[in-house]
Image (cartoon, rainbow, N blue to C red; front, top):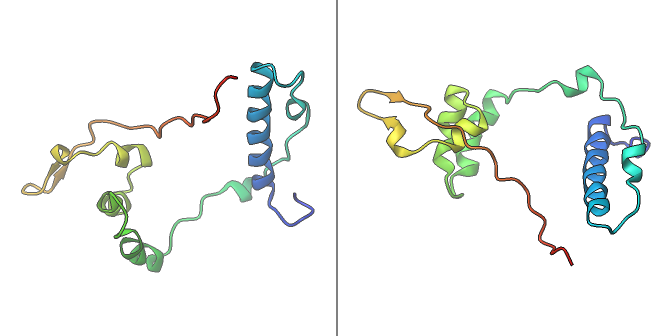
Length: 121
């Protein structure tokens, strides 16, 4: 992957995905060994893993881009207040006090765990 121009982080994520999928295949008895567990994942350099914040122009454009989508309003306070994804997903209207300009972070919602659609046949 890296010889084809992909960054080490992309190759690392592909390795992790393959290792997890093959581990599941071994668990279900479809494969005898998880070859990806034997392979060494590529090293991700520190500067490559650093998060790059949005530019002012991107932040200003984001509400226009997400507007037609379901639950788009929750991403504006997330950007303005620096909320984490789980905090944003856990927001309810009862947590918002518009009169006193107050927001309570009462819960944190994790993204639903991915479930494969195949049956254990």
